[in-house]
Image 1 (cartoon, helix red, strand yellow):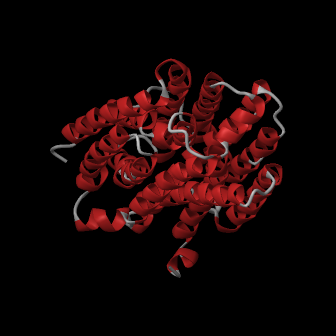
Image 2 (cartoon, rainbow, N blue to C red; image 1 turned 90 degrees about the vertical axis):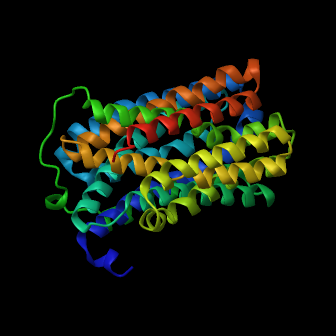
Length: 384
């Protein structure tokens, strides 16, 4: 571990881990509190769908600006710093929302921030992988999942102790300042960014586009579990708010464990098994758990799908970055844009369809979509 604080590329990678952990910690708290906000302001599921749509739309735009213009101009350290500061405004706006319109406004700084740091973190990790010859994408993804998990656990304990929700979200905003100073400490110096030019906006290469579509479908399907599970448990499975928040914890736990083990498992077996075959197994087990309609069994199913599908994103990223002929920040921007486009479509559509078909139906459908998407990915990399 000592080399991560000495090697300049690994220090830069640490800044990427910090830059994704802190916002995801805030996001985990937010997702676990969605039932609270919906009850507080009487917000329908459609408004939550609009929230995800606005957030993702802004993120898509700024992920392109970050990869093609902002990082080459000001460097990855400055981009991450600005991104986390903007994101830190999001909890303050959210907790002070008095109606659905105010709630939707909170999606604006959230989308700005995610657009800046998500692409930047992906590029930094790719640079560090090439420079050190280490498998780092799954480890970076682990910090993403672990931040979400810690936020969900923290939120569950906060709700269990019946502490002030208002104080919690004010505290979350201050957490962003801590992240800012840590990024300034560990981020890449300007000369080590390996990002020396801006590129014009154009369509990604066909092979990158195909990998991006896999990520698009991934976020449009499996992401539904992470974002809607708490609402699903509280509204349709009729659980307490505390148990509903544990659904988020189960998802985050599975993802975190899977991604922390990702590098080891890839060395032990191979990328295809870790990124895809495990996902097919987890999808089947999760579908069986849904059929029981028992919230405790479903909690186990959510944990398993999180565990088994956790390395799909980092494995696809690794395949894509190895084959790209464009510079790394542009490729990262294209992949992030397509991935978050799925986040725009999937969870947002659930917001509209939940009022008509119910969340249980949507979760069942995502299992089928995930199975097909993973199978297509395996087919496309069968000779690699």
